[in-house]
Length: 97
Image (tube, rainbow, N blue to C red; front, side, top):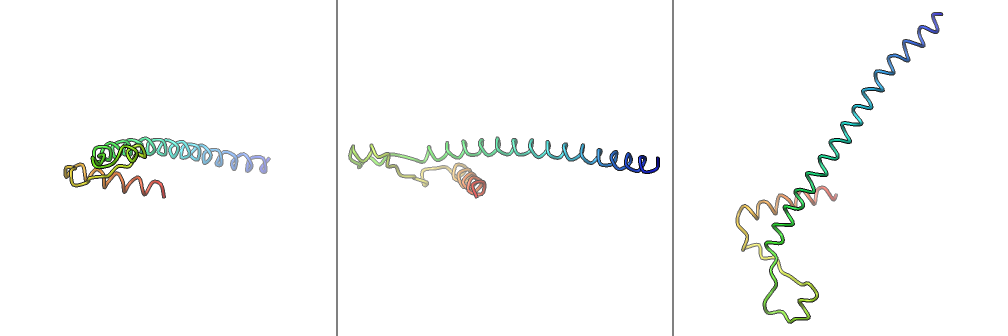
């Protein structure tokens, strides 16, 4: 009877650890989802700023424009746009590594 009681105590103590393990796993999954959503938001903001900066060069011939060649003119961005671009680019670069 004592062996059965000891086995029951071990099983009960393990059960509480398993429950907390599942809670931790769920919390990690939730955090990963939130992080991915935040990174997508930053990526979209960064792409918006980059699209503002991209201008077609007026001296290019028609066939060169078909190759989707564009230049980024950072000097035409506002200070806040440049800061947003730098922040977003750094975060996206870190996320891809």
